[in-house]
Structure formats: C-alpha cells, structure tokens
Length: 462
Image (cartoon, rainbow, N blue to C red):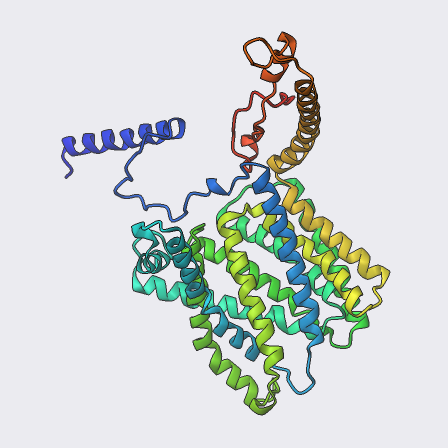
C-alpha cells in the first residue's frame, strides 16, 4: 500500500510541474523539468521558421519558385529521355538511392568547411560533432533497437512504393502536366490521414478543398482512361500519391518532426542505404521475369547519372527548405509545379492540351490551393499583410521624399558664425521624425510572422 506522504508529495510535485509549465508559456525565461513518466518531445523548436522580415519572405518566395521550376524541368526532361530498350523504373530508383547516400556526407563536409573558413572553433562545429548530431534521428529520446529497425523497415517500404509509383507512370501518362496535377491529391490524402492518426481538427473549408481537388483528379483520370491506351500504367500515380502521404504521416508519428538539418540529411542518407539493400532483390526479380527491360551493356549512363545527380541536389535543397523555410512556401512550391510543368511541356514538346484537361487541372489546383490557404490564420495573413504592405509603401514613399527634401535644403543652407550648419527649427524637427529602420509588422497571431514592435510604421487597423 502506498504511504500517504508519498501520494501527497507526488500530488505536490505534479501540481508544481503544471504551474511551472503555465508560467513558462508566459515568461520564456522560466524552465520546468520533465515529469518522470512523461517522454521528452522529439520535435525541435519550430519558431525560427517564422518569417521575421522582408528578407525571409523574399527567400521563401525564391525557394518556392526555384523548386517548382526544377521539379517541372525534371518531369519534362526525364520523360523525353525515354529509351525503347531501357524500361527499368525500379533500377532507376535503386540507382538514385546510391546517390542519396551521399546527402549527409556532402552536408557535413560543406558545414565543416564553412565553419573552418569562418574560424568559429566551436565544439559543435567539428566533423565528429556534426556526425554525432546527425545520428540523433529521434532527438534525445531513448529508442530500442527493435523500434529503430521496425521504423526504418516500415518507412523504407513506404519510400520504395512511393518513389517507384511516382516515377513509373511518367513514361505512360499523356503529359507530365497531367501527372503533376494528379499528384496534388497527395494534399487531400495527407489531410485525411492527419485527421485519423494525428487527430487534427476538421475544417469545412478544407473539406470543400478536398472535394474540389478530388473532382479535378477524377476528370483527369477519365481523360487518361478514354484517350490513353496505357492508362493502367499512368494511373499508378494515384497510389503513388497515397504512399507518399502515408510516408509523410508515418514519419511524423513514428519518428517526429525536426528542423535539424544534420538529422534530416542523416536520415536521407540512412534511408538511401536501406533502399539500396532492400530494393536489389526486387530489381533482379523484375529483370529476370522480363517485367522490366535493361541490359548492362545498353544502360544509358548519361541519361541515368545526370538526373540522379540533379535529384540529389534537389534533395539537399528541399532538406534545407524543411530546416529553414516556413512550410507555407513548400506547399506553394508543390502547387506551382503544376502550371510550370504545363508551361515547360508547351515549350519543349508543344503538346496539344485538351480543354477538359485544362479544366480538370484547374479544378484540382484550386482544391489543393484551398487546402493550403484554408486556415484562418493564413487567410488573415494574406489579407492583413497585403493591406499593411500598401500602407508601408506609402510610408516609405513619404519618408524618401522627406529625405530628398532634406538633402536639397542642406545644399543651400547658410553656415553660421561658429562654422556649423544653420538648420531652421522646422527642418530639424522633420529630420528627427524620420525613422530609417523598417521593422516587421505584428502578425504573431497568424503563426507565420514573429511579433516585433515598430513605432515608425503606420498602425494596423484591427
């Protein structure tokens, strides 16, 4: 039987932890210990992803446009490099996995060389410290070998199915733009899986976005069935999008979210190693059963190596985006891939796009866009930030005019008897009222912008 004193002490201890936790939310400087029976969270601090100034916003936009254009180019160029005697999607995915193993070594060497060039000499900047930090895939959470092996095996299988089913349809689909449009169903599947496994709240606007997105994908599916004799191959993109969403949610549930770039790249390299080992028997089976056609002497190495290197570079950029760019820009980048892919397809092949294809792609894009922008905070961010941007532009225009006036007046100002510039009182007052520092507006409620105070900017209407 438990002693009364021990139960009282546990009650007091748990109550103290609750109080400290609430105080920590109010006063960031107060730290509270972790309860004995409570696991330490795996997630790193995500606050640094918030857009803090115009520079961060521009970087996010540039990142989204760059990754969208790169993905659209890969869609079209890879489709045009098809060879009749080389039909081996699983072999291509296996070969790319070999390249992906070098993700963490490249990152570690770049970071180590950068720190050495800057002569930081911090203990965490040594090569061994970078490797140790990257190896903490689960963070500081203790993990058994059984859980680690089961998680990696499960995630590797999902990754193989995702990559194979997203690559194989590229050579059978009517156009790469249709494939990119049908791939947007990934956002709908992620939303549904998050409701089931992560217990997120259900929003009516997002349900409407899911319905709209599915409608557009259904239209494109019917176009493939009616006009494409290889439709049974091209529609593999749909289960591919499902397994991609399943991988994303499974990673969040089994391992947890992180913005530590070393751990992200380490996991990418480790996943590549597992894929190389587990996929090789599958590659051999598909080869000797004539499901896939390739011969060692006829392998187009240039066509194989160049896209694999480009995909590795894109993986490094995407990993850096996960670590430093707000997820809003990543989602927008995923959506922009659709119109860019259609545009690049028109430039390279000038393929005729049917009106029904354009309609289906537009509906699917609109539904996916609603899923991204459906949060109240995001809608508020766009509306309020646009209005405040106009006010800020007007403020900067007036400040610039005042500075130009001041410079012109100083050229004709007389010199006083003591050798100093004789400024009239109104002119001096006007110079003191101009604040050259532009700070970020208060958008802390949106979850994207961090709160900063600025007395120089015009006040925002609420």
